Every structure is written in structure tokens, then in C-alpha cells.
Image (cartoon, rainbow, N blue to C red; front, side, top):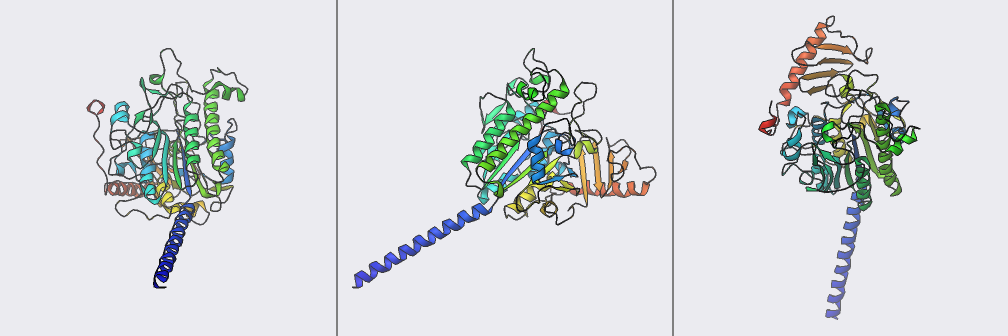
Length: 470
């Protein structure tokens, strides 16, 4: 009997262990499902007035317009540096470019072999991956591709995209060199880049439907393709499949730059729609936070025939610190958390994206570095005001500071400050600096305090190739 009792006891213990293991696995699965999937759509040089949901009656962007109806459309959302590289470094780190060490636009060989964003910096996937997220980046990298700087070395499980600031949409070349990669290896592929990145994202989401996952989808659309990325004899123009032009009733080879640009936006809209459809088909909508943000305002290029994008009704565009350069379209959807069809005039920033991702995943803020962003969820859910007393902007010689409805701005350090009241002068048409000198002095002092603060915890910029130093 004693042997029988021992056998029963051992069997009971084994059953208990199996039950505990099953409960632990179920708890882990439940915890994983509780963490939302995160889809960050980062579009390139799309202006405040470019989309239908931001007032453009000429463009066909039904999927982005629908996304705005399903979530919240922000009307005072800012990026803090109006150029592609520093904008990407800022959104991925949650830190001002002058703090994270990447405040300039990477040029040719820097994109290919430069460190770019200093390795001390941590980016979104490096926070999410240890929490069980599958992570992937599809599209434009543009923050350095030296060993240690590549996406799969900075927290992404997968990368399919290009290293540089822009490529030929069809041949995928940059300055005469083929620039499409999978992981760290060059990867030959054919197709329209906007479609390729969207389809790769959809395929990744299908493979990781059990979640949680984080997909960073930085499209190169609607960035213009310069002549250096064209093949000999190829015309430099907005690149888009002819079938998209035909949907507007225009010929497939329509030479109109305005028409071609609108079609580029529509092709981008189609691609975003396919990714969102994948989320829906897998019944992941309720568990997925979607963010759609432009990396900076549209570039205005007078006298080139290419001034066809729109930042209306804002002033100027990319590389400036006027509203057209730094205020961008931004849409957030999170069913059950964000009220559909909402609109927010509260000041938010792409610096807030990293804190939002951490909050959504139930992760604490880091204690080993300064974050300049704040969790925007109270604003996005209609339960709070802007977490920013002030926002500062800088790129090259241009700088600016917004506090409440007042905005201090200057195109370079040698010109006097201009002052605008954005409540009454949305388009920054009349400077109030002369009649409101006290406000200029106060805001200038605040800007100097900000400059001193970003030096705290700041990285030294990565070394630049000698040939590129100015």
C-alpha cells in the first residue's frame, strides 16, 4: 500500500504541476493579448493641407479620411525638426534632436555607412521587444546604417526598406546605387516602393497575428525623387503608376506635376488601406493602436514647377520653423479608448509617441535618460489638456518656440525674433514683435533656458565623414 500511496502522490504532484504550467501559459497568453498591437504609419513630406480630412477637396484619400472618422484628428500636432532625418530620430527616441545627437539631415555616404543616431540612444522597439513584442520596420530608415546602427541591431526583428533619404520609387536607387535591403543585406526586388512596404507590413502582421506586435511603417511617399535618383534620360517627376492617374480621369502619362502629386497621395492612401484591411481581416482592430503622422510639412519649392503640395492655410514648409514646416497631419485610432470622429486642437508632438507606446504596453518610463515627450493619451481620450507648457523647434539656423497661443520664430540666428498670435493669425502673416516686446523678451529667455536644458543628458553628434563637413 505504501508504494501505491507514493505513486498516487507523485501522480497528483505531476497533475498539479501540469495545471500550474497550463495556468501560467494561459496567463502569459492573456497578458500578451492584453498588450495592444501598435502600428506607426510615418508618411514623408505630406503637408497639413494635403489630405481630404484636412480640407483638400481635390485629392482622393478615402482610407486616411476614414481613419480620421474612426479615431481622432489632431489639428495642433507638431514635429520639432522639419527635415526627414532629425524628425525620425526624434519620434523614435522621444527626445529633441539636439539632445539625442542627430540634428542634421544625413547625406549620401552618411546614409550608407554613417552611425547617424548615436548608439547610446534607445528607440521604441528596444523598449517593446523585451516586453514580448514582435517588431518590424518597413520603409525609409535614414538615421544611419553603420554596424550597430541598422534596424535589426536597434531592436527590430525584421527590416525591409532602404537606408537613405529618398529613392526612385520603381528602380529603388539612391545616387546611382541600389538601396533596398532586407535586414543588413542588399535585397533585389521589383515593384512600386509604396506597395512593397505596405505588402511587407501586411505579411508580417499575418505571421504575428497572435501579437503583440509593433510595426513601424515609414513610407517614402510622398517624398519627391531628385534627378540624382533617375536613370539617364529619365524625367525627374512625381512617380506614380499610371493606373492611379487614370482613376482621376487623367491619362496614365499625364505630365501635370499637380496631377501626379495628387496621384502619389492616392497610391499612398491605397497602400495604407491594405494594411488596415489586414488588421481588420485578422480581427485585430479592437486590439490595435494606429498612428498616422507626417514627418514634416510639405516642401515648398518655388520656381521649380514643383510647388504642388499643400500646407494650407499655414505659412511656408519643410526645413523652416514656420507652421507649414512643423505642424503636420496626425490621426490616432484605438477602439474602446479613443472616441471615433473626435478632433483635438491641443498641442501635441511626435516626441509623445514613445511615451504613448510605453503607456499602451504597460511599461514604465526610463529612468536613465530624459524624455522630452509626454503621454498624450489623456488628450487623445478627451480627458486632458496639452501636457506641453512649451514646445521648441530647431533645424539648421532656424528656430522657434510655442507657448500657448504665442509663437516666437526666426529663420536664422542673425535675424530678430518674430512673434505671432496663432489664435488670430494662423498663417503667421503679421509679426507682433514690435508692439509686444515684453512677450518677445520673456519667450526668448524661455528659449535660451530650453537650449541650456537640452545640453543636459545630450549626446555628442556622431562623427561625420570628412568630405561632408562644412
